[in-house]
Every structure is written in structure tokens, then in C-alpha cells.
Length: 277
Image (cartoon, rainbow, N blue to C red):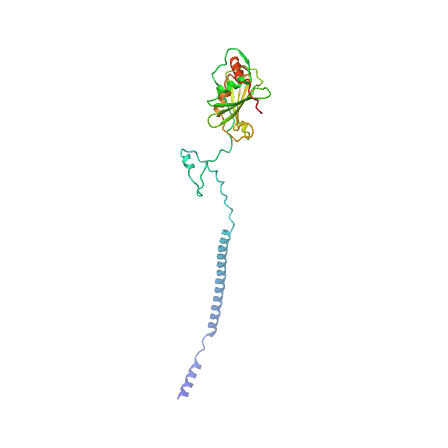
């Protein structure tokens, strides 16, 4: 029975028309080609996109990897010097972090030279006049000095109008030396002198000098020392610059002086020692 059934089924199958396998295979081949082409296009596009992304990324990195030019800072302005204030003495008492007292800084340079015109308003005596002497110079100088004890009056050895005197105003003696001369000039004496205050560095015998000049050529020079004659330590200056100006601007100075002043000067200082210049 089984064999008969099998034979019947084979006979029925053999009588059926075979399916169109060729179309199925062709369609399958065509579908396969289409899929491969799509994959190739996608691969190309993907590679292009990947390359573009790489270009963008690496391009961006390269752009930001350029060395930057250094930014040069503007030069700093010098710090302004602190202005003096009323509380300066209080600051001087302060101490630094190392407990070292803060002391004021001394000036780096001396006072500058200055000149001024001085009109004393004192007219020269109208009486008789005599040739100036060193005695008359010392006598007038002592009259013009501020209060104090004078000593060591002396004159130059060459008989020039060059004298010396010490003045002690309570803090020790200070040395003064004076010279008088005549500069070439042709004008009248006049009542106004031009006075210059001139600092002299590295010379204690002339810490500064005061020089007066009149239109007629009369010239008076006063040397204000900060030491005494010889090898002596530094000492006080006997006069301030303003006091020195008042001395040399007195109109009684000249190569001829009031006769009475000359006589009294010769009597008082006619015989004084000679100083070593």
C-alpha cells in the first residue's frame, strides 16, 4: 500500500510544469549586483565624509596650533616720588620688618648755584675816603657778622686784600675768609649788587662762596668753610647763605673805603698774624 502511494505521488509530480528558475536566478543576480553597487557608493561617500571630517578637524587643530605672537607689555611708568607730608617725622620713627630704624635719605647733590640782585638802600658815606686795607676789611667784617665770639683774625702774606676770621656762635668756631678786588668795568658804582651763591664740592675750606659784583667792577668774595685751617675735622658753617649775602652786599666795601672806618680798622687789626693760604 505504501509503495503504491509513493508511486502515485511521483507520477503526479512528474506531470507538473517546472518552475521558472531562470528568472529567479537572474533576479537574484541583479539584486546582488544592485546591493554591491549600493555598498560601494556608501563606502565612497563614507570615505569622503570621513576625509572631510578629518580635514575639518585637523585643519582646525592646525589653525589653533600656530604659534602666537608674544604680546609685549607697555613699559611701566616710573613710580611717582611720594610727596612730603606733615607726618614725615612720624614715618621716620617707624621700623622696617627687620627692626632696622628708617632714616631719612640725605640729598644726593648740593644746592644749585643761584644769583640775585641786592639793593641794600644804604648809601656810601659822603666824607673823605682812603685806600682800603686788610685792617679796614676785618673791622667792617666784624661789624657785619651776627652775634658771636670772633678769633683768629689774620691776613694774607702777600699784602693782598685777603683776610681770615673765626666766628663761634655757640656750637664751635667756623672759619671765614674774604677777598676784595676790582674787575674791569667802566660804569658808575650804583646801589645794586649782583650776588652769587656757589657751592664748592670736595673743599671744606670753601663749603660755599658768596660773591658780589657792582657795576663799577668792585668784587667781594666770602668763603664759608665747614672745617678750620689745617688738618682739622669738619666743623659748623659760621654763616647761612642768606647771612653771607647780606655781608658781601654791603655798599661800604670797595678799594677805597670811608676814611674813619680805615683808621679804626688799622688801629684794631693793624698787627695780626699771617695765615697760610
